[in-house]
Image 1 (tube, rainbow, N blue to C red):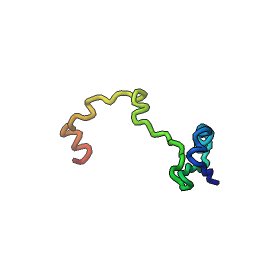
Image 2: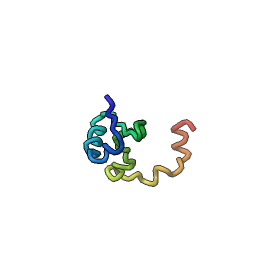
Image 3: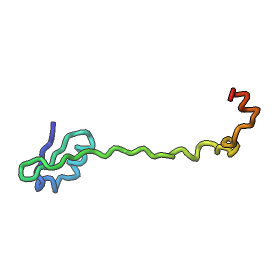
Image 4: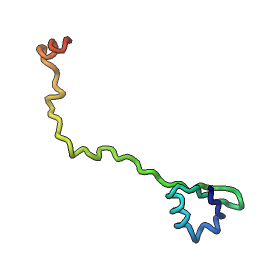
Amino acid sequence: MAHVVAMHEAKTPLSRLVALAQKGASVIIAIHGKPAVTLVPVRPQPVFGLMKDQWPAVPSSVFAPMSDEEAAEWGL
């Protein structure tokens, strides 16, 4: 069920309205009786590189070109 609140009425209980939106309720703020905005919770964004320091370093030899012998073993 949507909670429609006038802009003037939303000023005082704003923290309560935000708490409702965080719990999943639909909260709409109206201006002059017309819906203007909807309060929605912000979803956490993934943090890239979060575990980067928990893995061993890759040796630079991994990026070295293959020898002819290794290439032959791979059928190249």
